[in-house]
Image (cartoon, rainbow, N blue to C red; front, top):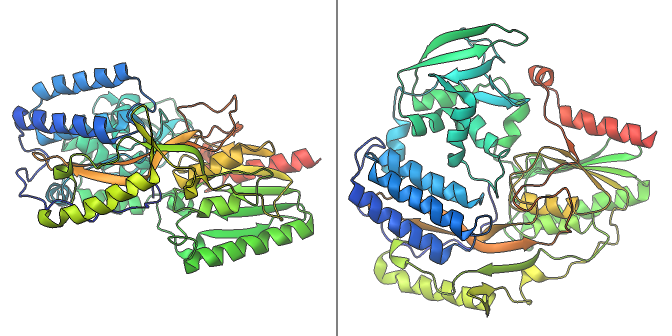
Length: 506
């Protein structure tokens, strides 16, 4: 999950008949140009994150590229890839580009054209992550159909958005949907010529693999070798799996929070139970004089406020708030005729009135064309440390899966002077992100759905030399799963932090 959805638009335009039924159908340059112009206008008017990580010159340049690409494009897939590239270039993990349902259903029904096996990034190499008779498990894939893997992977980055120029988070999507992404970029392939190298071998081998269908690939992914270890990156959590605490030993405790999707608000039953859990845990930690606390958020893709904030009250020594400032680029929703909806147009004004009123109330301060959140907003509420706040050493475990509310929380904890960060760079930004209020538009000719969150947020964190503006949270110790630990389903990062604590205690 990529963030808390505070508003869901219910006043949206009914979807007209689709023209294209397959992603490989032809689409005229005229239709592409029309949709690209509308897409550009929507982003310039409604998306406050357009220049968050990119200069005006860079944005102008990529749109010049896009219009030139349209002139030499022929198919729906060509245009879809252009929109994905533009969406990814902005640098927001809350950006999304979705195919209309009929075209997506046609992909799901395809019986061939897909790479057969899931891959996984291990120690900087893309390896085969499936037991089969053709290529040994764990073999490094060097090229596919004469395209080197470094070129293949970089061409697939556009399908999975991350904050800023982060790349580690993109592996989460590629590990899962490699075959689908390959098909979207390169088209359907009947045969895949794969060049590979087995583990601990210098010999380069080659094999031809027959393609399979969409559904068959995802069945293979569901049976991937690494599933027992990495399933938490892709599962939907039951409420009783989301958070836990246990003592490692007399001095060290482990707090795991796999998601912040714990009820819709502070009054929900799930949140109340969670708050009681935190109070009980940190009361016991204080009484037991626990000096080391491991906080594991490696599988936390986000959730709803204030679930990340109430736990930070137990991990901080200073006052804080959710963010330093937040703004949007409009007070009236622009380009209403393209908003995604199933509600008849004659009822649309009811929703428009409601949500425009919300925007004016929540973002009343205009400055240089931006509309800023009021200091009275709940997001600027000053929160104080809990009486049972932990004052020992914090060891924060992070991964590329950490996003949105997860990375907001991780950034707050990483900002502490008593925190050591272990793992891999998060996909969510350290200093801020675009989030909170998602909006979706339908491009009229292609029916491609483009979504983004409209609130530009600056997180309440300290500036640190090792934390870079357009990147995720950077760990103090960059630790990835080793190849041997991959084969044996061992947690390299947890073993590292336990050894680190043991060494420091000595």
